[in-house]
Length: 226
Length: 359
Image 1: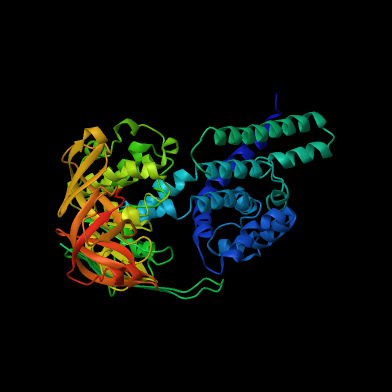
Image 2 (image 1 turned 60 degrees about the vertical axis):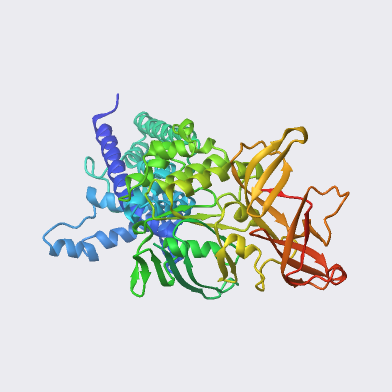
C-alpha cells in the first residue's frame, strides 16, 4: 500500500528515532542526574542550554549544526583530517542533529523524576550498605521509571516528526537522509496528496498511540511516584 | 565495646537567611541498651545521628565505635561502609519494593551477621505483611518494617530518628514492646532521638540532653531525671521514673500491685500478667508531703521517705528530692509549705502519691 520509496523513508525515520532515543537515554540520564542533584552555580546555565531547542527555530539549530559539521566546520575539518568524511548530509549527522534537537524532551522528564525521588531514599539506601552506583540503579532508576518512559516516548515521537534540522543538515537524499516529514513535504509540493495522506496518517497514528501508551502505563503503577 | 563520639560540624549562616549552626558533641555512650537523645527541635539531635551515620560529609571530628574508627582526621567512611542501621522519621521505605523486598535490600548488601529475614520478621510481627505493598501499611507497620530492614544489615549500632513522631499515642504504645524486645534480644546499642519526654522515659536506659548543638547532660535515665544539677528536673514535667513489677491484683477494686525498689504502688489494673516489668512515671506535681501518715485520706499510695535535697524551682516552688527505699522521687511543694513544714535534708516524712502514669 505504501510506495517503495515511502517505505524506505518510513524505515529510515524509525531507525533514526530508535537510535536517537537510545543515544539520548544514555547521554541524557547522567546529565539529568547532574541537573537534579548538583548545587553548583553552573546548573542554571546548563539547564538553559539543554532547554534551548525548545524555543529555537529548528532551522537556526540546523544552520549552526551545518556550519559545525560541514566540510569547513570544526568537526568537519577534524573528520577530514582523520581521514573520514564530514558528517553533514549523512545519517550520522542526522543522529547528532536529532539528539541535540530532542535533548530537552528526554532530559527534562528524567531530571524531574530524579528530583522528586529526593535525597531521603538515597540516604536510606546508603545506610543499608548500597554504594553510590548501586543505589543509583537499585533506587533512583526504578523510582524514576515513569520519567524514563515519558522521556523515551517523547524523545522518540519528537524525533519522528523532526523537519527543520533534518532539512538543514541532512538534505533530502532518498534512502540516506530523506525522512518521513521531508517526504511528505515533497509529496505536497508535487501535489501528490494521496501519498502525503498515507504518510501523514501513519505518523499521526504512531504518535497518538505512543502518547496514549505513556498515559496508560503511567496510570497502572500506583505507589510509584514519578 | 563502647561508643565514643566526637562530632564537630559547622554550617555557616547561609545567604538565604539560613541560620548558622554548630554541632559540638563529645560523648561516651553505653555499648548496649537504648540511649535516648532528648532536646527541643533544632538542637541538633538529628544532625548528630546523621554525623554518626556519615550522612553529613562536611563534618570534622572523630567517631569511634568500639574498636573501629569511622571518622577521624583524614578518614571518612562513607555511609555504606559504616555498619549502622538507621531508622528515619518517616521510615523511608522504598515504594518500588514490597515489604519483603525492603527487608531484603540491606541484608543482600551486608557482610555483617544478623538474624534471618524470617526470624526478624517474626520478632517484629511482620510475617503477615511480607508480600504487601508498602503504600498500604499503617504508620506503625512502616516503622516496624524500617526497623527490621535496618536490623537485617547486621549493624553494630542502631540509630533511630524520631521513629514514632508521626504516630498517634495508641500506635506508639503498641510499638514500644517491639523496640524493647529487639533491644533486649540483640544487645545492640540504640541511639534514639526524640523530643517526647514520655517516649524517652518509657524506652531509654541512658539519656542525653541536647541544647544548641551541645550535649549538655548524659547519664542513666533515672538519675538524670531526678538530678539536682542545673537545667535538669525542673518545671511542670519534672518527675521520676520508677522501674516496677506487677505482683498481684486486688480483684475487688481492680487495682494492680506494683513492686519497686522501695515499696509497692497501687494503680488501676492495666491488665498485665504478674511478673511483667513496667515503668511508671510519677510527676513531682503529683507528690505531696506530710509529716504524719495521713489518716482519712483518699490517697492510696503513701510511703515513708527521707529528704535528700531541696531544689528551688522558680519563685514559689521547691522541688524536694526524696529517697523512697532505693528509689529517688521528686515532690513539688510551695516555698510556703516548705518553710511551714520546716523541710530540710535528712528529714523523715511521708510522700503521698496522687497519681501514677503507666508508661
